[in-house]
Amino acid sequence: MRIVFALWAVCVSLLLAACASSSGALSTAPPANVPTTASAYRIGVDDVVQVSVWRSPELSITAPVRPDGNITVPLVGDVTAAGRMPDEVAKEVQSKLATYVREPQVTVILTELRSHEYLSRVRVTGAVRTPVSIPYRQGMTVLDAVLAAGGVTEFAAPDRSGLYRRNGQETQSYAVKLDRILNSGDLATNYPVAPGDVITVPERAL
Image (cartoon, rainbow, N blue to C red; front, side, top):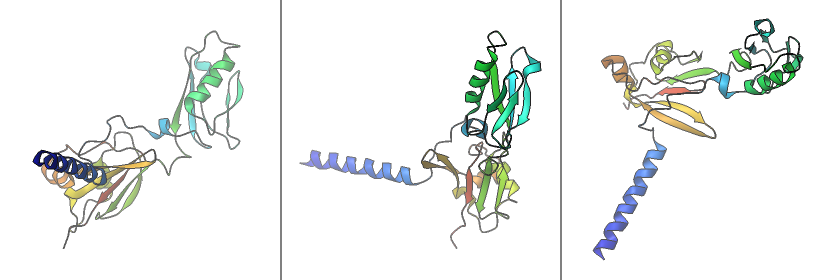
């Protein structure tokens, strides 16, 4: 009977631990290879795309997506870009160019994400000098975003800060030891941020 009770107690403890870890900030770091908006979202009107044809610079262009959703590619003509992924556009251009160019190799890159400007922002909220919503820049970290918000206030509890990232239908949270970053130079939780991230600095208990 004692053995059964002990096993039951262990199972309950493991279940409680699992629930606690799923509801709070995660101790692990967010993925190192964060997707940029260029790879995560479909092309929109006003976005600027670069179409590159290998060994055929005269066929390569950089152009904004027109209000009708199209771009014009040499030899090919109009190609619908809005609402599609860059690789989908590249495949169509490549297929149409095959009539004129032997084995064309085409890449399409989003160079300016004008239509996704809102989705491409990083937000800093809570006990900071100036809560802000700032454009994402490649290489941006938690510290960069917090400094853009003017740093933390005297009422902040910086070591209880969190980084929140949308992952499909769920939001993942990651613990950020902001006090250690700012005052001790401990950059272990100075994570790279991704488009759409929210950094929250809570207030300390009075």
